[in-house]
Image (cartoon, rainbow, N blue to C red; front, top):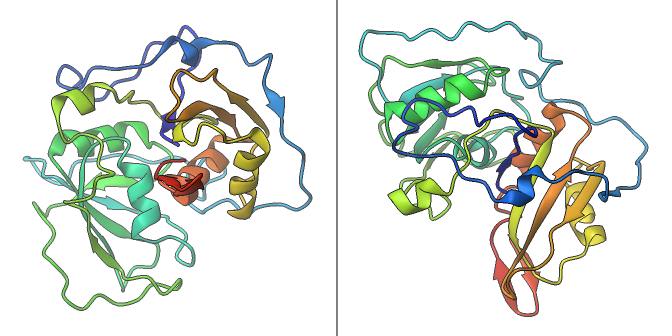
Length: 260
């Protein structure tokens, strides 16, 4: 699952540095949703992560740089202290630039520091993730944490992502394929197994407790993978789906594809 989808006839909202990383999007992004298959409804209410989406505790956020020279480190506030971790936060911010390191703060629950590849990537996050309190940090980089404390889900509070193959801006060619958009309730998924059915895809999100409302599979253009669009009930649910399901591996006929 890759990235939010822009509304029809609305130009991409590129952050600073757009001349280096131009927008990209196949024509399928702009097709209507009339032929989408509606996903079955599920009983129960999924609690939205505090600090995300229109229902955030602090919906009005001022994004202010903390210094004259902007670095590559940003502060992220308002995360769910019980369920958030470094991998989930990476799944979200990697849509806007390369991620180097992520560190959750022990003394401030729900607060993390993220070192991006450069200040331009931080500016993109600040501009597009406007329902999450995100500001520049005074630090220019994050030091390695040798003995990180454990988060409530028992994962480490610090992780290095510099060598992650899931970073999406490692070369100009790779970066040019990224369509930089603010969060949307419609997501574009790709690199899924060619034989994946709509029911199987819906099941993956149901297991993670982020049920979609509609799915549309694109006609296959290659025998290697499939793609399509998936819709959620709100922007907040779509953001949560990215954090929980982005880069989830799917087994198919002995092959393992890394992106949902």
